Image (cartoon, rainbow, N blue to C red; front, side, top):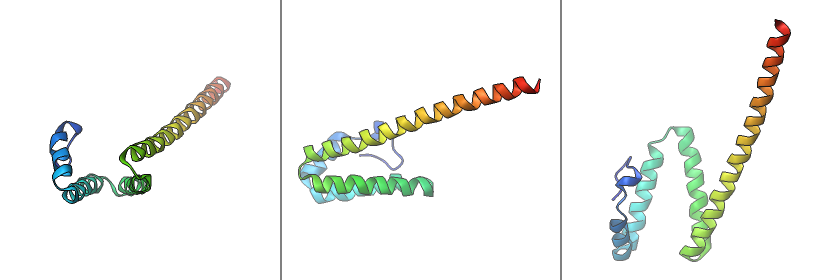
Amino acid sequence: MLRRGGRVADFDFDHWCALAERDPEAYFRARRGVIEGFIGERPEEEAGRLREMQGCIDRARAAAGTPLNAVRSVTRMMEGRLLAMCEQGVALRCASERLGRAVTHLEGGAG
């Protein structure tokens, strides 16, 4: 089982598989509890973003129809977010380089 505040190393895959097979309702309750526990341990602003992201994941899973389609849908969402982060990183690097050049120029002109 995954303990509250646990790490991936604490995740017992066999336990979760057995629970899902034996009692799907209990599995989904436990899953929701772990997710909520994780989100609840985060600062308020981060928790809000995580709840929003989890809502998107839950809606995508519900609309997918099958577990495989759900994985595909969530993977596409993750890819989109990673691409957006990459683009933001590039923009930040460009802005940082411009700022560095401006500072160098100003320091050169002040001396």
